[in-house]
Length: 205
Length: 140
Image (cartoon, rainbow over all chains, first blue to last red; front, side, top):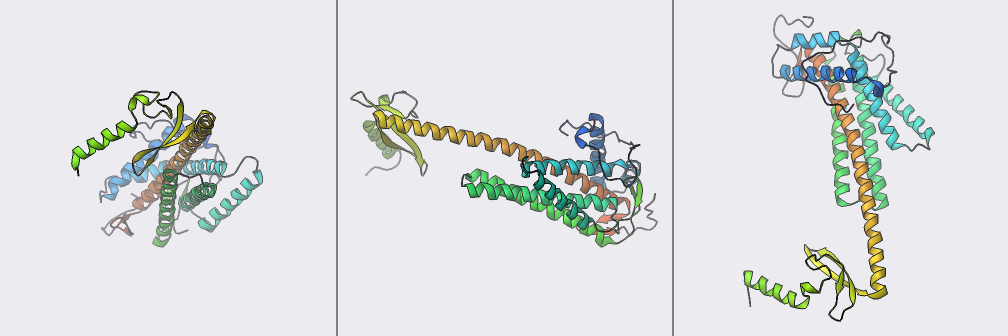
């Protein structure tokens, strides 16, 4: 996912024909075509633009936001895929190749965390938020582990230590922000009928 | 007693008298660790910064100097390798952090979009509240 972003004026409205509703993401995000990646980024980019406009008490972008959410049900799956891709690269860096068992233990732990955070019968939005919490937690573990490892070796320079501390702080901020968003969604406790991931969802969880 | 610029220039002149620039084997480059002494022999030195000033440590000539030079060269190589390894690791970490940033941004955008589309608004970048306006239809 390192290609340059294209202008965000074209919306990507596509549907996955081969993925049943409710199916866990199984595709390989690294295998996404260039066009798919572009379309995904365009959709998220356009949505972000509209959300920023709407945040300034402007109601004009709301119909388009609803349209995108309604007509891009694959967006949630693509984000899930992206989360899997991110998780894969984190675990690859954290666990050595010669310890496949350890990798499996970590994967199982992450899956358990994901289930626990998402709760029973989670909406796709809750799944996304739970996924984000798990990934940010994993990132904290990675940076904390590297920092502790380098400190124990006693070879860390001041610049390295500062860099690692900064990364740990940023990871904690992201993690807390992810938890806050999920808590906010749950606190609202109102039925929010939005078509994400090919079905009507209810954000009450 | 001398003060200010005059004092500094006098100090520099005195320092020059102790270690003439031309004595160094590399001429203008003062960082060479090998110094040629007036008697003709080479002398190995180490330079390091102490409180912002370069301090030169005189190690020795002949076999001792060469041994010290070899140890220093190995140490320098080890540090360069470590720096290169760290740079590589830092690049990988940046890449991973970039993935997490992108993911977080996408999820946050979708969550906000969902709430806005459902008729909520964020109050002063904090709490989400339902819009009060009459006739707000979340399904429009």
